[in-house]
Length: 339
Image 1 (cartoon, rainbow, N blue to C red):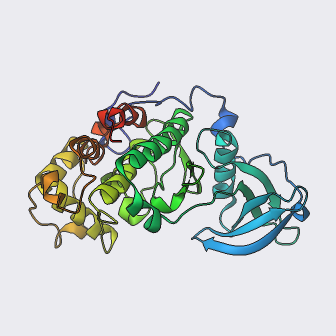
Image 2: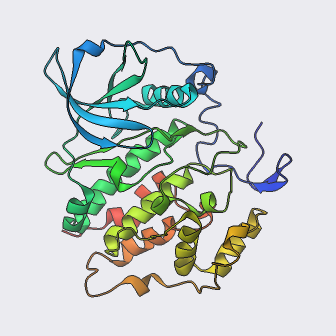
C-alpha cells in the first residue's frame, strides 16, 4: 500500500511526494506490463523489408533516418539505437509497445535487428514535421489551443498508462500543419511511474527541466511533463525561445528563480525537506518573483489573460500544484473563442 503524499520516506528521511493522479496506474496492471528488468519478448521483423533513404537526425542514444518499407513502399522513420545497456532498450521497447496506437503518440510499425551487430532499429510512422523555429512564430491563438490540446491528450493518455515521458520539448513534438497532426515522439527517456520510487534526475533537456530535477528531488512524477509544456507555451506566448535559457544545469535553476523568486524556491525546498545543493552557493541570489506582465510587450500579441493564467498554473515550483494534463485541458483558455 503506497504512503499518502507528503509523508516521510524512511529510506531517504525526506518528505516524499506521490502523484496526484494515476498513482497506481502500473500497480493496477499485471507485472509484465511494466517490468522490463527481466528482458522483453520481441517479435522481430525483417530488416530486409526496410531501406534507409537519408539521415535526418541524431541524439545521444540513437541515429534517425528517413526510410521506406520495400514491401508496401510506405515511407517511415528508422531509429537506430546506439549501443547502450540492454535494460534501457528493453524499457523503450516495452513503453512503445504499451503506448503505440494511443492518441497522438507516434506509431511504432516494427522492430528489426542488424544480423551482425545485433543493434535494434525501431520503425515508426513518418510525420511531415515543420521545424518549430519556423512553425511556432506563425501560431495564432486558435493554433495554440488546438496543438496544445493535442499534446495534452497524448500526455494524459501516457500518464493514465503509468508512463512519464521525461523529455517533452519542441524537438519531440512533431507537427504537420497541413494535416493538423501532432505526434509526441522519442520515448527513450520515458519511465514507468511507481509511488515511492527514487528516480534519476538526469533526464529531460536543460531548457525544459523541471525544478525538481535541478534540486535533486528524486520522487517526482507525471507533473514533470507539465512543467515542460509550460516552458513551451511561455516561449511561444512571450516570444522568448527558450523561455528559461540556462548555460548549465545550476544556471538553469538560477534563470527559473529570476522569474519565480528565490523565497518561493526555498519554500518549495522546505516543504519536501530538501536543501539547495552546494553548487548554488555562489550563483543563487535573492531574486524577487516577477509578475507575468513583466514579459508582456507590444510584440506579445498572444499574451491574453487566459493563456497567461494557464502558464502560471503550469510553471509552479511545487510539482503538486501544477495542473495535471486533464486539468490543463479543462482550463478556461481552451474554452475561449479567439477567431
